[in-house]
Amino acid sequence: MDTHNAKKWLAELLGTFWLTFGGCGSAVLAAAYPELGIGLLGVALAFGLTVVTGAYAFGPISGAHFNPAVTLGLAVGGRFRWAELPGYIIAQVVGAVIAGFILYQIATGKPGAEIGGFATNGYGSHSPDGYGMGAAIWTEVVLTAMFLLIILGATAKRASPAFAGLAIGLALALIHLISIPVTNTSVNPARSTGVALFGPSIAMAQLWFFWVMPLIGAAVGALIYRFALADRDD
Image (cartoon, rainbow, N blue to C red):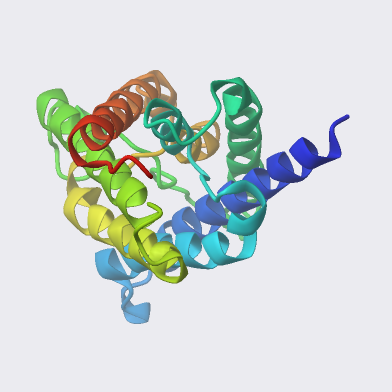
C-alpha cells in the first residue's frame, strides 16, 4: 500500500469522524436539554469548531476535506486530482459511519433512551420545520455552492493560509444557522450517511437527496470560482 495515500485517507477518516461525532453529537446529546442552553446556535458552532480544529490538525496531511462534496468541488475546481477522489470519499464515509455508530451506542446507553431524529437530514415530514423538497433543493445546492466558493477563495495562493481553517469553519457554522430549520443541514453526504444508518427509516429513504444536492451545489460553486473568480496562479 502507498503509505502516503494511506496517511491521507486516515486523516480524512479521522477528520470526518470528528465532524460527524462533534457536530451531530452536540445535537443528539446536548441540544435535547434546554438547561444546557446550546440550542441551534450551539449546534451550528459545534459543526464549525469541528472543521476549524480538524483543519489545523489534519489539513497538513490531507487538505482537510472531510466531505465528499468538498472533494468533488476541489476536483472540479482544478485543485485536486480526479484519481484520488474514490479513496477520499470512501475514507470520509467510513469515518462518518464510525462516528454514527459510536454516537448511537452513547445515545442509547441509558434506560428509556430515545434518539428521535438522531440529527439526520430531511425534507417534507422529516424537515425540522416542515419545509418541502423545493425549499430543501435550494437550501442544499446554494449553501454547498457558497461553501465551495469560500473554501476555494480562502485556500487560494493569494489568500492568507493561516486563516483558511478559521474562515471555512465559520462558514460552516453560518450555513448551519441558516439551514438547520429547513433540512437539519447536510451540505455533506458523508455526515448525512453516518447518522442516517442509525436513525429513523425515513432518513435512509431520503438519503439519496443529501448526496445528489450537495454534489450538484459543490460542482456549481467550483465552476463559478474556476471560470469567474480564479487567478491564473490559483
